[in-house]
Image (cartoon, rainbow, N blue to C red; front, side, top):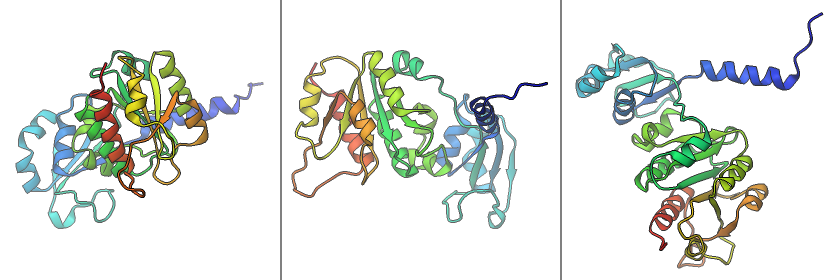
Length: 262
């Protein structure tokens, strides 16, 4: 008689099958061009208007996928209605950046990462990816659940950064934070109600690697995430009611981290 597999094994196998079948539709000239030029991106289907194909000529040749040229009035691909696709859409596999240790220890750029705690808005995550690339961070890290997945809207906001900036989605954010701490990272959470400023927190870090931890607008950092940080700091605001959204706060914090005195 066959032995019944444990439920956790069944769930893990199901998740692996779902991941293998998962695809993402990227849209917009810049997002599609950068994906076509990325050799690490597995491309499946390219849908273009003639006008978009003329603009993407070199990228199409490099991408290795035959385009389907369609009438602009019959641009039928599974993206949200109203998306500004500019006559270009690409179905592709999500990128695989490898494991956290490889990226955080030996990845390119400064020993600096950003962790996002339940930031679900793809536009915010896309903007964070852009800032992370500009300031040379090694990765943006978010939990698999309650985070923005790789989507066309995220890719378009990221303006190409999605193809170059590692975006790792992990099973448990607190576990990833503990793993980073074991690698030597100092975990700095951002919250508005603490007395310590970000510059004061960074002044104690020296040349050690830094992990900046940001929560969603409104709820902020979850209690478990906050407790796992080494220190929680704030970005000072001139006005009593001033605050930054998560993508702007990430940009300010990244700049502060890369320009800190060591």
